[in-house]
Amino acid sequence: MSDHQSFMRMALEEARASYDAGGVPVGAVMVENGEVIGRGHNRRVQDSNPVSHGETDCMKNAGRRPSYSSVTLYTTLSPCMMCTGTVIQFGIRQVVIGEDQNFSGNVELLRERGVDVLVLDDAECKALMSRFIAECPDLWYEDIAEEQD
Image (cartoon, rainbow, N blue to C red; front, top):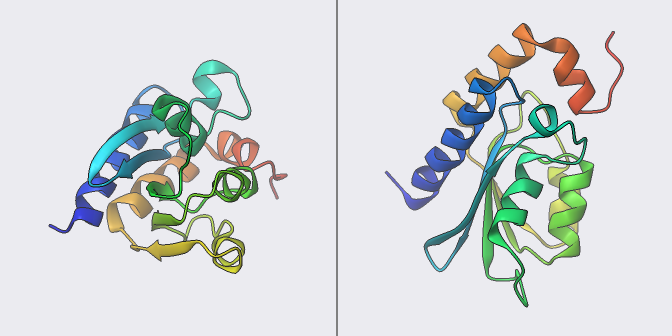
């Protein structure tokens, strides 16, 4: 198993923790020099906080640092506009995404801003999010701030 796959498994554990707690199954892990410096998952439902996404929870748990330029962010789902802005704002130079099929997010914007983006097209990430969307469409559309058809 590659390092990318190994760290994505950790992010997937976080996503499952959110799902098991009744939340949106997005997990994230921040890595610097091969060491995990932060983990987190979407806590929007659990905390009743609309900005508590997996990536932002992970960053909060990683804590303050003078620079994020040597950090790699692993996230199970393509980042939304808010999380994309956070990556750009704090100068995270590499993002590894588990899947971008259920939500395409802002991969191109990240790339346009010089972020190295790798999409793993991970079957487990896709399956968990697909299951959640089928089971909880109201929560899903609320999370991505879109009206349901």
